[in-house]
Length: 75
Image 1 (cartoon, helix red, strand yellow):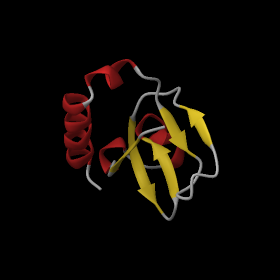
Image 2 (image 1 turned 180 degrees about the horizontal axis):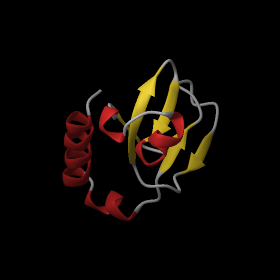
Image 3 (image 1 turned 45 degrees about the vertical axis):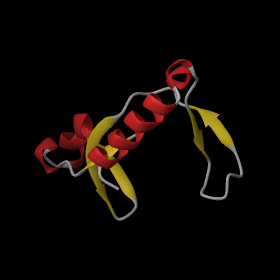
């Protein structure tokens, strides 16, 4: 899914359920809903490959460039 698609879904959710704008955010542990936890961090850009995520702010520590970012981590 692309960020623009996710944002569009959030817009629709907020339009149809304005009270939800005041709800807490949670994230699921896995796709089967085996656990949930609160979202504490804002989104961050970075490099996602081979199942790993390198935040853009730490790219140099991994001998990478922040300009290589190809993903947004939601939590």
